[in-house]
Length: 612
Ligand code: G6P
Image 1 (cartoon, rainbow, N blue to C red):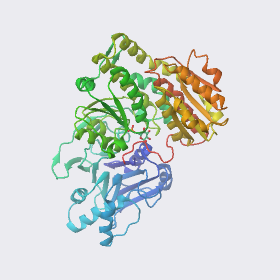
Image 2 (image 1 turned 120 degrees about the vertical axis):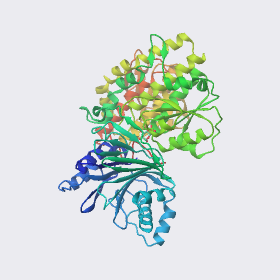
Image 3 (image 1 turned 135 degrees about the vertical axis):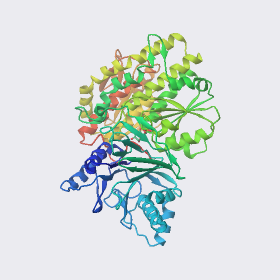
Image 4 (image 1 turned 30 degrees about the vertical axis):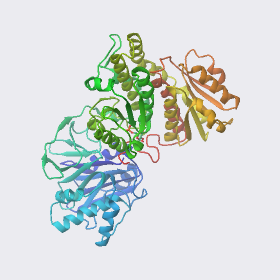
């Protein structure tokens, strides 16, 4: 949520920052802004709207500057507007600052500053923190770094901040707590960003800044300190990411590219871990904690959004194969109630970005109560990965489309491997079934490839129903969370109201919505409940609803009840969600595109939600 970029070094700062903002735009696109420092002092440009609007505004400006900061915003405090766009400039006109996060105690500090005669140009919490820092700087005649340190000791909330001073054309001061910050180390230059995507073009050596650290960044010097002013040793990591991973590669949208990458990403996720022939699953992080997981009295899965849906599928799989009770919690609910967590409970935290604030705080809370935290995360080195005791990366590569697609199927692949491994070692899954499921899992990438061949057919269906005002998505068992995910994708991308429901629950309410105008998407692949789902289809048909069904090849009954059919390869019910979700992703994508929406950057959303 909000993308931040900074540069200091011999290059022109503007193009580096602009390109970086474009790469981070998935984190928010309510406004964009850049502050550049040169001998004229601070040059600040900001505009409501996407980065392209700012670029147009700055088109004919030629600013010679080798240091700057840039921001792309997802609005929290104050509506999207030029005025509320970052960077903000302090009242003295000396400092510019950008911020990702939320300052919770800003109103108290604002009151104090108002009493001192400060006025505010924006409605943001950021401007309050900035003037607070500026006030300390002026009163104490200290360095900017010291003023930041003093100010942050009083701050409650989450932040990643970058500051530049008009009289210092070399130094960026940065600090973080709860919101991510990566610093790329070049030759005589440094790059700062919310994630590595703006950096990999220039260097693969990075430092992930930790919470409560302040970075003093000059072209050829990087100093890290904690809030107590003690120097910290920067831990340099090598990025394992290629440029191609963050480019569209010929596709119209990142979302489509990422949907089409799924055979590869699922394969990459299984590669080196699952050997279906030998019947082995090697997962170092899970093996280390296998005893604790196997003997856990309970597993609690914590996640948000699409990752929460992956958690629901995992609940079914783990209970079936490991016979351990599983609860699936929205991180935002878990963190604010008083949950009962016992020592020995295992928490599985699922997150694509590894930065979702609610998930991060929820696991910290569970950790304090003695739980073992297993992180299933996509972004390497992210906060949730680092806060977990152990875990497993999903290896789906950077996901840039705001609506999650390939991360979901990769999460399912990892969670399935964890469940099969634990179930087999625990003895709740016999060898024969284990071997069979390993084989089924290993065949998913090839079957996903076949599902993608249905793209044109799915596009036709999308065009037929794109103007429907509502959709209902129904499924049972393993396909119920898939129905939820299908409905979420449609809402996110096409702004059509959609509800996901367990097919059998429909008669307790949603069936009242059924008319001859309502498309009802059935996720009805062959499983233990198939006949029951077919009965639910009958019930919709009897009320003249429009049935679109995702079914397994060989099913001859469902087509007789359906207006449109999407037939996918057969797979065991445990692994089938990795296939049945793909047509729903494509359906949402094509409807969104047909309606003329920006599917990669749907309105009001952001990919990495680093505020609560
Ligand atoms: C946002 C994104 C969703 C994502 C959710 C959880 O809402 O738009 O696509 O599922 O955050 O994110 P995480 O990174 O924790 O999986």
